[in-house]
Length: 380
Image (cartoon, rainbow, N blue to C red; front, side, top):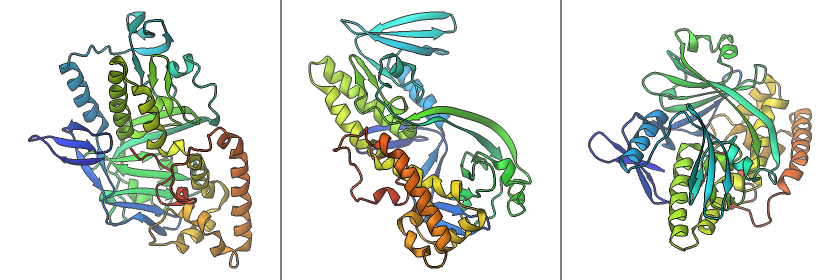
């Protein structure tokens, strides 16, 4: 995805692979630094002074998309929750719970985009073949004003503070409008550590959100009769905002083809299977590896590993797994602990990975899932 100027006052979000374009009028900030920080402050830079993405405000984006849909004549029902779907001879029925009670909608085709805990996908039996990776993933995120990191480049950075001794181990800090920051997880514990107390001296929470989900393998063929399951509803946990937009655009194209007697569904399925890294079994290997250090290492051991890769363009959790021999002679006990733990975690993954077909490889290189950012979607 790229951003460029559109009409006066608008920024266009351009998706070159699917070929769609969305107007956007909200704040836009560049991400030019990604900084991973150890307990004692050693820093590793997967990206440094290099544009690799943008912050854009979800609420502004959704408001613009809603206005466009209404202008095009779409009927919008607010305050509704999808309960399930049923294929019929001539189309599909969708059960809803609205503010005025339960009701049923009928259509020739339907797109289900009701999130990672999709009731529609479940009602159609599409979760039965999926393997559970985590029965319950959850987290809390905060929008905070007055956060004052002391690290140069934080104004355009994603910060990942990795301290195993505090709850959950990782506190992520990203960009928001104005001087606000998006803070994931245990900032309360982080602010008790002397090195980080000044960051939060003038901070205040302006918004708090929580999420909970069952993390499963993706739906390989997200079409059931006349219903398409798209974006997060068919994914392990998220396709991100840009991935959801790409899925919606591709799904509409597929349905138009189907309504005109062409085979749009197979085209969508083929695109879906190659568009996101989580459709490659090594995606989950990357996730397990990425989480491993904060689960098995002490603060001192994380400091040691980060010092090895200080100022390098790597994600340290993935880099040590790829270069474990670096510590074998100097820290044999740490070497053995990481190796044994990773081997065990990957062994536990084998039943989940076995659900992927042999031709599901997306990564070009055998160890590509250990490169920077490859634990995240996507390729669209």
